[in-house]
Length: 377
Length: 161
Image 1: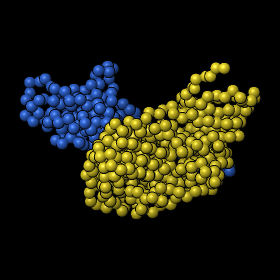
Image 2: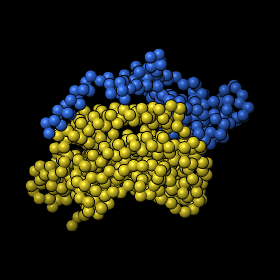
Image 3: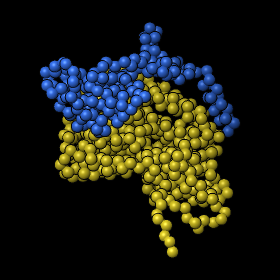
Image 4: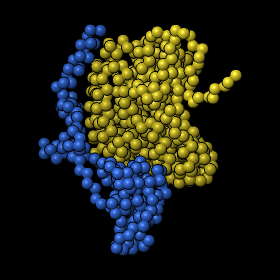
């Protein structure tokens, strides 16, 4: 009797029925991103699916133990370049808690404005590629990407970089709002609100999109709770849960906004929830620009963190991100643990793509807005 | 249903008559804001060679090297200056912010590609050259709240309007 050596990833079992066929989607497929999804098909129907994660794993948590607290910031936000501010903020919050540094109010407002701009950019990216291209709608891909560039232009003005901001350090943001930024941002928001109406007409109310996405990949409320999905996927299933309300950080406690929820839990409601969140982000930025106080933007934080552990939670565009940081009286963390939305939402994929057409898999996968690099870390 | 189809078609057709968004890079370059994090600029008359930039660098791309020129640097008698290995730099510019004497600065230069790998190693003398990139195009909204589209126009032309 010979035993085969264990192969990396998921091995194909040999007990499959003769009528089924195993298909490997990815890991270099433009649709799946850097993630292999092993699907078993029976005719045109998917019998089972197994996402094989880890293709772009690079050990962010281990690398973080060898660099000092500030030097960790650029590489810890690299896992998700479309959503860099939230990955950065979740890491900075526990360090501030350990060091006992309180960010001044103006610093909190600037961080909130940057984070909400980043949420819009990230949702536009998701709308363009994960939802637009995957459902065969090239027009929304071009429009959303074009409008995302206008937000990138302003993010560049605020932080100095287009995507890799490294904007928040322990103690507060690195820069104050530049001259003329508020005017340009409010003018852009006026433009963007008109564009959202056009997006609705060409994409969300488009019967061909509704026909593709409505009723596909239904995640019921109880299942969503059991699987532990987070963020827009959870809210699309009817659970009203948002870290910005439950455990307010930054300036969210002072600002008024709603948490949009949908009851259906299908792919179409997951499309719509991001559309509604963009509207709420516009509302948050408008209020923050009005209410922003004067004063210092940051406090001086020490380079060393005392012994102890702290957690920070932020609501990123793909769900809740939790960071655990342990300090040991040195300038390097002794342990950094990251839990993020992409990883926790992918758990739902094998349950959603059961007994659906092969052509519906990109729709369901796109509606989860999965970012492989963030999940693999 | 049919009205929704017509609405989507109308929205698409309306877009044909709007301004085009595309900017023709490299013939047209975008105006970069002050403080854009491009390549670094080194003021050799301010640098004391303390090495804080090399300590804070997340990618370990900075090394302190001695310079062999005939000039005298009173603040830096050992003549040790930072040298950047741009194949590794992530442009976070923590070095610029942590510099105690303000010897490093931001530049809008981002076209750093080279044919030879060794040319990516920027010596202190090369880092102290002034920036060369000049962009002038910025986004402009046409019509009320940009309902006629968005284009990129030269800034000088915008001001004369």
